Length: 291
Image 1 (cartoon, rainbow, N blue to C red):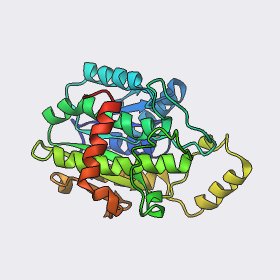
Image 2: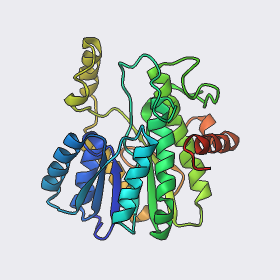
Image 3: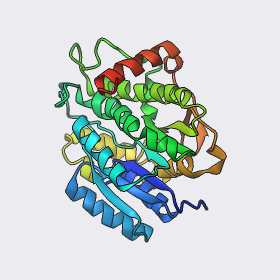
Image 4: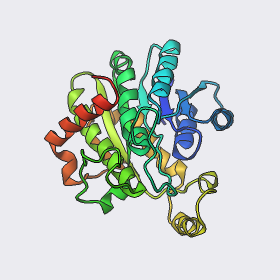
């Protein structure tokens, strides 16, 4: 029942899954949705799908590879050249490739998982922040993972951010998601009084599109087939994105951590450590070259 006419919303990773479902739901409520996708071909197909499903033409596509700082800066420039207002940004794009056994270093010299899932989200936010402040009340939505509950003592290993000492995709992914939770809490404090709120949604077991499973070995495919029986649909998970983006009761709610359906949850104890949050901010700002 939300009316999002005159609202401009960015959704990253919008070509499939929850990002695509959220784009359809938000556009269907009248929002102007800017879908940010990595692949031109998949992005253009998703754009047509979203327009058709939402029965709206107020949808556009901007290409961005979230592993590349140059690409993130280019996408932000492209958005700002077209729009003077931004009401909501949903940082949905993520990288989790089960088959990756060694760290992959990006053109910026960063480990790919940490770059995509944390550092370049920080960068994108910084580049859009002035416009978000000018558009206040506005909202930033970050995305973490329910899998973090299996890491109750996880902290940020500042000596191994690039995975050079030891690498596992699982640990790299959850460390980046833990960083996003801490970043959410810290940014919410920093933006108090600006009219910009920051909340994090914890994504649980959501059915993954077949196109993202094609390259997996058979045993992992079987595991995903089992998980799918108990999974939320992307559309159901996207409803919590929509609620965080649109519900008037959240106008002044910031620094929250949420699960579906619209439920506040607690992060692990380390996520609330203010000193670690501040150190993470400073380290990330250096890695993103925004100091």
